Length: 142
Image 1 (cartoon, rainbow, N blue to C red):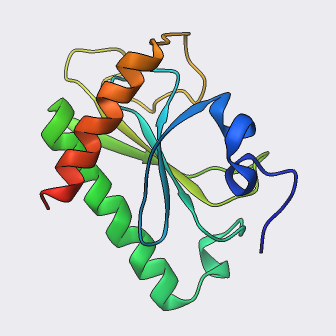
Image 2: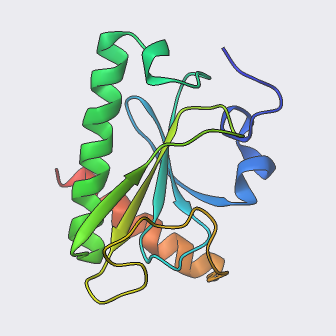
């Protein structure tokens, strides 16, 4: 089931406004979040247009969390954060997705909750692709 007004369902230009594609995973699609004040921040969006974890079957939910864990391992390998935070809100964008956010001891917001839309640290497409390729490689090596 897809929603024609949903960036994650439609992908393309809609999702490109805030995310850079990395790869398809078993349960969803992985993106680098374009705002990179937390270097290595990514989003894993579920394949199905659902807004709540309870809308998934047990098998779908378990696979989604397995993919979240795989992505977190890749983020640790590529970016070497001291901690990874996870966020799933969806108050306005009703498509199940997790923000997987590296945090660095002594860095901005260490010891607190990360902001959804902090400053505007954006990169070039070449830099996004470099990050995406490093994540692809780290995922492949698992």
